[in-house]
Length: 288
Image 1 (spheres, rainbow, N blue to C red):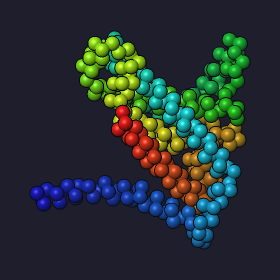
Image 2 (image 1 turned 90 degrees about the vertical axis):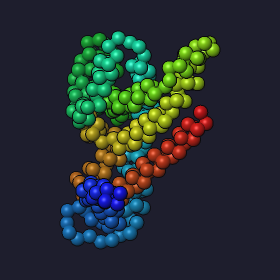
Image 3 (image 1 turned 30 degrees about the vertical axis):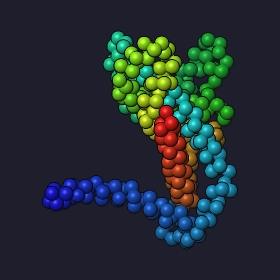
């Protein structure tokens, strides 16, 4: 048994080393640089303590990026889980070509986020505007991505369209674990579809709901590719997410140490939100 355990441990060493070198070590270096004034290019820098962290709370650009990101994440998380659960229930029903439709709905998940973003950028800029002009629809005649007030809605549409696919599969897996005899018994008791959903379906897929809510929120808070492909943070800074700000400021603006501090704060917030979500939703699971 000891020899077998030794073999198993040795097999994990390459994965652990690669994980440490390419993920853990850069993260630790980022924390180290967040206490300096390094610009990311030279070989000289000074330690400045928590000055970078203090300045984050005084920076309007940082505040706007956090506001946009959290607003975006909440809206996207709600919409993704609502539509994905609805679609999963439809795909779980006894319909013709059910497997075909399951494959179709999963397609967006295997497409590149950047490619999807560039395609929708073209649609918003050219196709939809022409349709709006031909049909005489005013709000559709202008490019939504060019509006400071409405550009974020275009990003939400793309993120939800692509994010629904993965969550639908998870909900579908949860629905298939439910024993159908429960529905047969509820029919005998005279329960309607709405009562079946709230008394049988939702409580039994509550763990899948928890997973989907946490994943959707985490992915939405880390939004980056859609921003780059659709608006690049514009118009102005109206749609600049935290990830986009860290990238542009750290690698293009000479703020490597400053944005390293921002990324540390960003990580702490995402981890904290995820932990709170899990604890709250799991408590709700127990109450159900």
